[in-house]
Amino acid sequence: MRYEMCVWDLDGTLLHTLPGLRYFDNLTLEHFGFRQITPEDSFELIKYPLGQYYENMLLKGGCPEEKVDELAAEVTAYDFSLYSADCTRLVEKFAGVKETVRKLNGLKIVNAVHSNKFDSISKKIVKTFFTDEIAYICGQSDDHPSKPKPGSLDKLLKEANIPSDRVLYIGDTEVDILTARNNHVDCAAVTWGYQLREVLESYHPDYLIDSPEEILRIIKEK
Image (tube, rainbow, N blue to C red; front, side):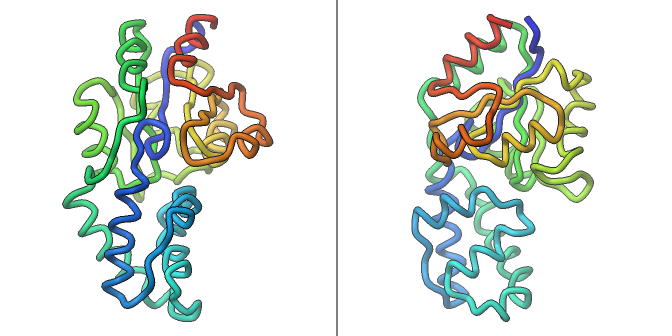
């Protein structure tokens, strides 16, 4: 088999996290006196790295543009305090994903998670739903670039000691496709997450898949 490692995006690929994110975002916006965001707003926000997420959340909540910079740090800290205390709230499993992870492990394929969530939260969520089935988890931190920048996979690949040409990146948005491309790894874009199929197609991923089981086919064919 060509691939030795599958790197999963977290939100919208490994787990359905959007309802929980919107729940805490709306609690935060209400606390600061702004209107709630819609599911469609959350669908757009999920693609942003942390540095842009809360700024855009404030704008969607009706914060005047000139106040965003002033409030962003305080809003980020407040939302993080709520979310980190209960970050698995409303998280759901995608059908077939956990079974696929287990089968990949059985094939001696290393499973990892790469996310723009805070590193501590990424680890807590993944370990809650996958215990020891995911070997490596890398979330957002100050010591490496966020997705989709070049180098954003360096820490993870170095830790796993697996070369980039042996890695399949699995994600649900154009950010994931660009992350794979910018870091010279192959990408399987999934249609069960938070982006439309036609948008994913326009970014020309190496694979476009409709079910987790198709990952096993890709692995075995290679």
